Length: 267
Figure 1 (spheres, rainbow, N blue to C red):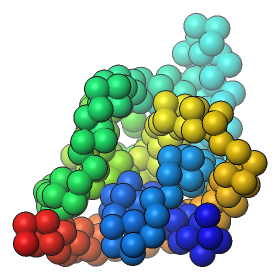
Figure 2: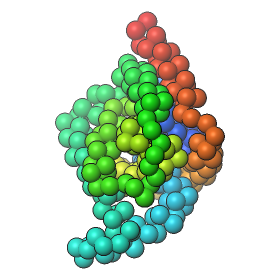
Figure 3: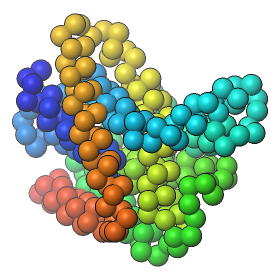
């Protein structure tokens, strides 16, 4: 794959994975809008691994606590903050894994990869994000996150399987509706992305990696590195901006893109 396309795919993934504007939609739309060949499943998985590295590094203190707690959780003990965090992240990911597996093995996930679906999802869930952000209280912080709330946000997250919804956007929406402030809602969404990306990578990337040749694996490694850098920049920028601005700029972008895509799809 040309280096330019690798960089383009990686930068798009890195910039959109953590912003509530749907990375999967942008990756699906890229070949249609540019005339480039589809980057393929291996590259899609590679850039997701890159953004996984970015969120792990940015939230390393939380990740480290969760990893330590995972050891206690494996022994059947949920008696430390780290074990509680690990347990909630696992529980919140189960609905996504179950629904995602059904869609994947029935072929419905591929059937939904259309401009029409992406356009409607961009528009509808952008409006839902705006409603949640403008009408919800900001009275809770990340430490208040309960197991019940993890399950609720986990079901919100399953909507991200619709291309154009945005995994970050819909989990932020769910967290805001539960009363979490903007930065804390984003923090929960980013931490939930870790097991979600791992689960998605295992489900969709195992076969692609096994059959890949050395050139494809080299392209994947480069894409991972570029996505890591762009993802870290985007994540750092968003978390800083949320201290002073709301989600409205992202909503405006979603609505504008959704309307353009729908006009194109129905023309």
